[in-house]
Length: 380
Ligand code: GLU
Image (cartoon, rainbow, N blue to C red; front, side):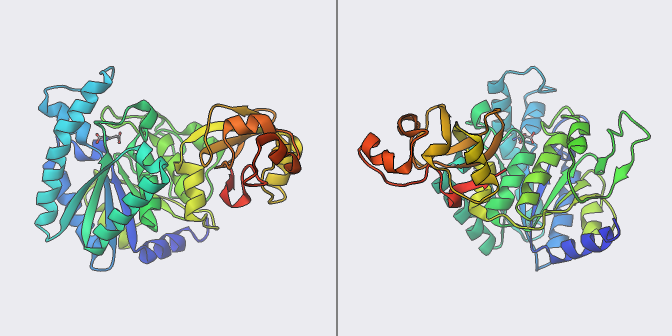
């Protein structure tokens, strides 16, 4: 890790558009409810790092936690989903009101943006959200994003706001993601359970061991955990964007980070940046089904940079339409690629295993030779 500190300095000094995710545990006080002092401090630090040359997009949790306190409830564990959603609806307005006030005191404007996974899985809604966010930034507004908990149930949920913040990086073309949590960063083991755990200041590559070692949700108010943070680092890293985990409960760390402090864990990105559309296919579009591909077809896709042809298709899973995002599975059932299909599941059932010259006689039409064109395919 010889250049770790130089890497950190240069990444932070170059960052012009930063997504900052604040977890519920950071924003709430131990007695429940929003911690106004902490929010004021955060706003002050965020404004100081903007410094007239950086834009910030905030992804803020805390709606459910704030709503729980108002409704006289404590933890979300075991609580029915509609009650959590109701708590979020109660809490979200208070959360925004507090941001409006605290950023307003520094002469900054804020905007509320609520999103669901389904919104971003749909390419045109994704682009609408992207246009709105870019316009807000042009007008010097700090977008404050949360999941739209009223309509988000399990199938369309982001899972937690760590995941959402990764998607926001892509939506806004940000060049850095900072996750403010109630922990200092990544350790070799959970420091709350293992006092001998060592702190990791820079992660060059996310290993399977790191993923296994990271625990699930630790605090009672948020739904993320170290694992979801590592998965988010992996996603944005594939997009060429670094991520920092920092303790948001400690005063001054965010401002100090840009001043060259050694705090937090930096995840370095993969060197090559994935193009925005391919990243959307790989990580944002919801998969509508699967195509099982034979070994020859898999080899052509993975090693030869070819498109998927009907001849390589062995079987079809699920029901999908033309243009849907589908997984490509090998004969052992592992997903090795994702892409946008040019044929529906019904059409594929008829043309699987056939030569391209047989598509038209069988279907009565042939719009494309390929089932998934190379440009619409991402190898995972
Ligand atoms: N949307 C949830 C809230 O604002 C947060 C989800 C999470 O980060 O766990 O409370």
